[in-house]
Image 1 (cartoon, rainbow, N blue to C red):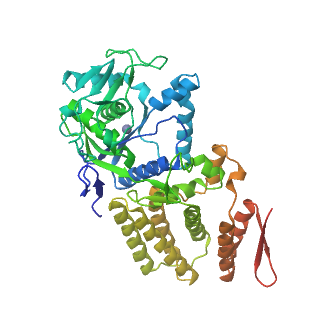
Image 2: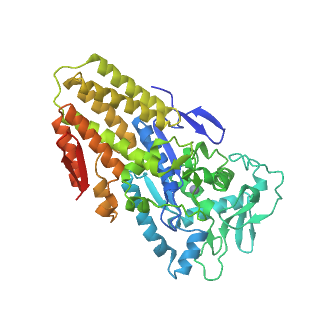
Image 3: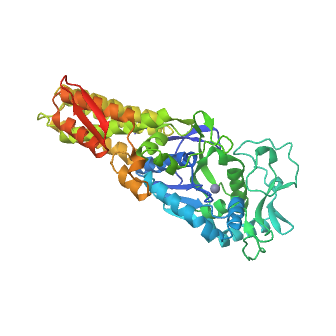
Length: 479
Ligand SMILES: [Zn+2]
């Protein structure tokens, strides 16, 4: 099997991946800040992390993954106060929505999903350790991390520290590299704000300390992999390294993996452009869960992903092609025997699929291996050269594919219903209909009436009626 290589942001190099303890991989992934519904840019990162854990498990590793839910930060406190409710009550709705959205996308639950507000004591203890070691100072009731005391500060994001004045502070959780300063570990409460009474005084944690505290609580002082969106590299992950390594004196994370941005129609998602889409909005517009998962997984994580109407349609027809192929494989009456050429073909496709994923999760390459196999198997079937004994190995290759990509089970309608999105959300597009009609025509041509009936029934279930014309053509209309 091909050696696993990951691009490590910390070294800037693509390196062989070897976990600290054989057979077990400790992963920490920064979860969402639950002040609103997560958007598709967030889900790009979560899908990448899901592909990562599924691939490592397919390679025989035991996975121990922690994901946090940031249920206290500047924005949550502000919005909960505006709504005149507690932060726990405010975030509950978005936590549930996030977990429901994850299920719709077939994202496996990490071994630990943990809330920041359940770990205030762990954060306080970590801040106490940092204080004992002289890495902190207090100003007006807030506690700051003194970055000048940690010479390695900036090693992940490679910021230039020369222009940074020692002792200047930043109070907000999110800021730019240009504002690299001493950051808040603990914030004194402002009037009317939610706060905790603790041994280090009344207040609330800064955003960064939560991930260090929860990661080390569940995974120990050194993790194998820490991942997140590229936006988190600075300041969040830089600050996590500073807090954790200052406290333990040990390397915090061995491999840092960061996923690139998702663009919508070539533009970065932003409030000012008004192109931020939540998963539910996409579903309500007719995109299927499997389509979105496939699309988000199909572009290797370190490349920008451009989300467009065409890319959604392309992903939908790709999933459709795979599902139709599996249905054909199960339904078709095949001649007896087995073809040696096909066995070799399957072995090669499986090897290429695994090698592509081992190469820093090159999902595009992995998909190419599977689609090539499907094309060749379809051609062999059309020619009557695909035999009974070839079906099981091909299905096996598709199972290995689906253990990672998780799109073959046709349960989109049930998933949409679970999210409260009805049939209106599952409108079949004209392009989809045309593709299925063309597929049915070719099935009829090769006298595969089983496949042709299956497609007719599928369209009927989705509200499309087909009428065969006398000249052998076909018309369709919506019911
Ligand atoms: Zn984090």
